[in-house]
Image 1 (cartoon, rainbow, N blue to C red):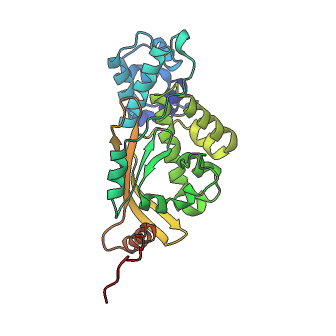
Image 2: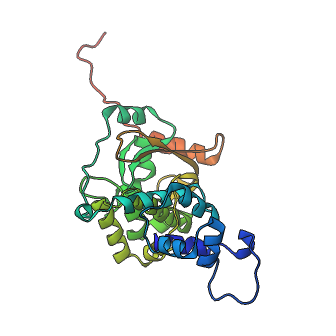
Image 3: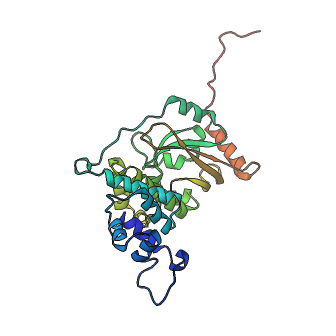
Length: 294
């Protein structure tokens, strides 16, 4: 809570907040007392909030702070997630848990397999791919073939991005993808603060990657995942794909996203994606007829 609010406060200038400015300022962005004025609370109260003292804070007041800090929708959701987690963190319940992975129902895999001209996959909040269609597997072959894939064969976007140097050759816009990857994990950490597997993943990446550590310290948040993805695929070359993610209600506790990657109709990328789809298609078994007609 402290680091997130301080980082958002540092990003807003008095001019952006509609406040008068005078003289030199020793801190970037807004001062605590300025945020308090904009939110309609006392400086002491806001200071306590920024230090993580959340008890007794109403959602209306949190919303006022979110407005004062110009939080976007994802950041606002993250702030409320942090508040809920703080209220629930009683001493007897602070031990991180290891929630059982929710299996993707067979009907979801059937749906994925029926999608033939888009790379489709389902990922959980820890950015593990838990189900994928053949084209999605072929598109992300370097990631699935990476040593960062776990013993179950699950590829993880975060591990591949930060722990496999080959990801910088595969993802053309590596820097933007890295920032998005960390922001997605940050949102999941606010949503599931007691997830031990998530904590272990973040600890592993923080220990082994200075790029991850720097991005994690920025406290940026991303919930929605959509846009354009550019790749240098080892089999078909350069691809520029549009991707879109939507919530997939598999479990009331576990967040899953269904992601689709496709190419613009008539583009070179579409032709190359079609080629990759043909390479990924399972061949029909060839059987010899038992009887021949003469």
